[in-house]
Image (cartoon, rainbow, N blue to C red; front, side, top):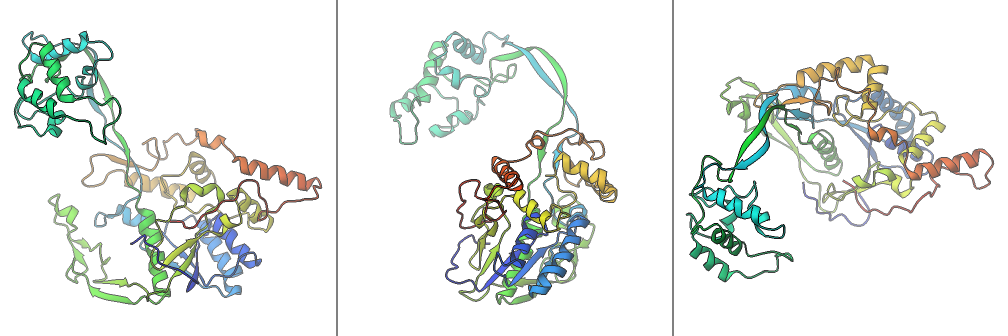
Length: 474
């Protein structure tokens, strides 16, 4: 998908990306009240794993707002995310937290010089320790950079362009003679070849020392240590938004703009709808499953580009507190984004108050049930108010734990513990931050209005901070 934007002039269509959450429902009500113009269509991209409350709000908005106004609502999807993630024949994923299985490591408590007094690396280490704190040796010859391989010279000398052998003083001196600072060097950069040559002379050496196994060519050995049990932690890449939200929305936009759907036989499964997934074949497995490319349909349907000059203005529901998410990367030749809530300077809290004042207090946050980005407060709320959904995500979390070909285990909670054992009753620091400065000012204005302030306050007219000017959003 190209990020180049060539759309100019009047848009062919105005399309609302509708997630059935707080901000998008606010936009729908603003359209109903005439505060925003009517778009040509709305698109809901269904991951198949939204909370039941989100689907209920979706149906209500379609019934009470979109249908009376004649705004068609398109429900699109690119599969059911929770099923796809657990399917070994599909390369789909969510940004789960990962942890290795516990392993034992030796932790050095105290280092000592290499016991072999003939070791060249010991001699260099002694030179380093004898130098003062301003000596360049302190940066070149430390635990991480002293380990040269006698047959390779190590990474430190790669940029010298030297021959792959232990560098001699003559080679180092020759290299130092040709060294000149260039425009990429920072102030204080030194001639490394000269520094190394100086260190060798101080140590009484004629060349870079031989590889020494006793100290691993560091000049140091462990003289005191203990064992620890550790785990390595990480997080998987986030691709679900692109796959399950953006792709089906943009495909629908291309259809609406006149892009033609082309059907071709799936070449990955030769039109059979089944194959051995290549990532499984690499592990020596020969289990035949549903083709992940055509999803078992035997054919691939792709919607081509719309006619030249046709483009859609795509409404995105970012509020002022989400300014960090604004970007132009999601724009294409046929789609350019717009964010009406930023134009109205509305924060999320203002959207919530606006909805409650109009009888829409039951609008839930739009996010997959098992989204790993959930806060502890959201996990607690699900556990305490929606036992069915909680049981579903706990079961998914257990099934999600191990994946073929992965050494690490996967978890929905950042603690890398099973969800029903995770410390979700612990309040995270961000939960104590109840509002932004803008929302505090807004709340104060509402109180003054309640007490009879003649100026009053309304969600779409409140200017509690500098106006946000933005062109595009991903």
